[in-house]
Amino acid sequence: MPAVATNHAKTIELIYQLLCDDVRLEVGNKLSFMGVFQEIHVPEVPFGLPRIAVCNHWRGTGDYLAEVRILHPGRRQALAASTPSQLSLPAAGGFNTNITFFFNLHFTQPGDYIVQTLLDSNLFCEAILPVSCAKSPDDGYANPLLN
Image (cartoon, rainbow, N blue to C red; front, side, top):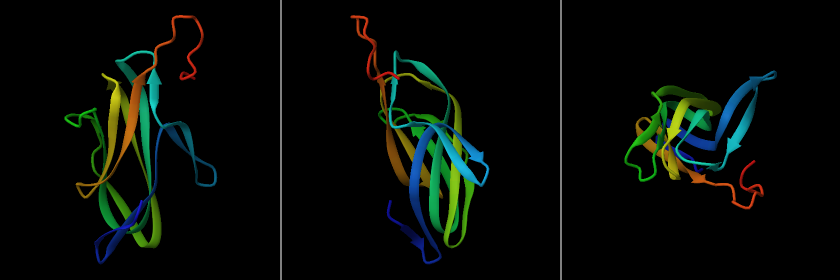
């Protein structure tokens, strides 16, 4: 993601964004990511997801209000939205990792869900989270799409 200059005193770059089941802080200030999502395949829809974490790693300078939203396919309604949180990058080349947890999400339909990241109430980036129904075949063999 390219750096975005918001004014002469602020510049910020999103280095990576991960969606996963959980994030843990380990010894040595290391992060462990469990169950990283590229897409979600389930036997049937609707379904519930007990927890999802959105991890954004930033580099740059400035102070911002960061928020994350997950939109239903069609972008008409939010599945989940975080409250704005302070994101501070005090020095040139500074970094910050912002982790947002959502609990007990109910996916009501298959399709492309949109994960949006906003800074100071302005859309900074968005990613697609495909959700599909992968029913098991009738012949009794396991579906290779299911883990």
